[in-house]
Amino acid sequence: MEPVTTAAVAAAADVVANRKEYFGPKALISTLVVILVFLWLVFAPFSRVSVANGMSSTGDQCVPSGASTSTLETIEKSVESDSTLKGKASLIESTANANNIPPTLFAAILLVDSKEIAKKPKVDDEIKSRGTKFKGVQSPTEAAAKKDGDTAAKNQWESSLGSKYEGMGGTPIDCAGYYLQSGSGYFQFPLKKITVTSWFDWRDSPTGGQGREHHGGIDFDCGPLSNPDKVFAARKGTASVKVDPGGFGNYVVIDHGDGMQSYYGHLEKATISNGQVNQGQMIGYCGTTGRSTGTHLHFEVRKDGTAVNPKGYLPPIN
Ligand SMILES: [Zn+2]
Image 1: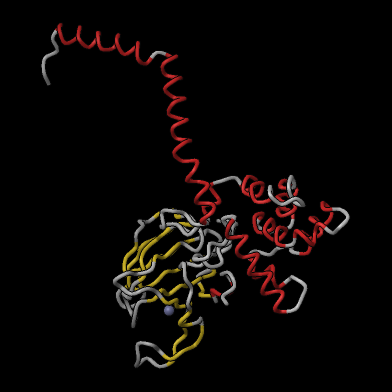
Image 2: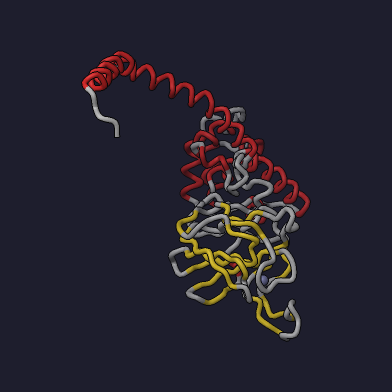
């Protein structure tokens, strides 16, 4: 510490006095306005672009970036060029919520059927009746299952719906089956691309010499170790990073707080530490650590400590 001299004190007082000129209330407010306008100019275009892409640009989240914009705003933008549905965004959103349908999915359903809806005498009544018809659907595939028509027509409708929905930030094409109700109890796929290599079932031991064994989870194919796939939290919860060299290798357990837990086995490495994780948050890279014969993700769901078939908790696997 240098001794404090009278000159230094005087100089410091001078600096404080000068600062007042730069940081007085008026100057402070104009500075804040300039900063806010700057931030808006920089970030507003990005948020629009990411909605169109449907994926967060960071690549470390498997969540629709549409979630960063208000759902109502997304719907409003999507229907504004549709003469039948223009101005109906609030009704679309409330009808969707009343029927437990992701609002942007419901908007996409209506857009695909817009010409049909235009023929009906009352558009509002038709929107409400479609809410009842598609009650509870969570994906374009589930919606198509409730659609009238022959298989070819249904497939065509599903594909149009899928691309509309994706354009609105829903179900990114490389985040198969993502459910918009983030954190509501639904699980999303832990990988962007889903290829099942082994189901939850009895099977011959893949590592040999141990006979039949019960496979307590689903194995998903992963990229090569040189470029391993990213693994995402299937649902939000409290994560623990663990190591079991004779079993799951490097693995993560997420406790979802309602008796449900999810396990992510044989990771090359975890990229989180113990603590809260959000649904869709990247938690690690696929690998082949522990008792494993090749790069894959062992995904397991336990209910009250017992392994249950993950298929019953994930979006439909085609
Ligand atoms: Zn497995």
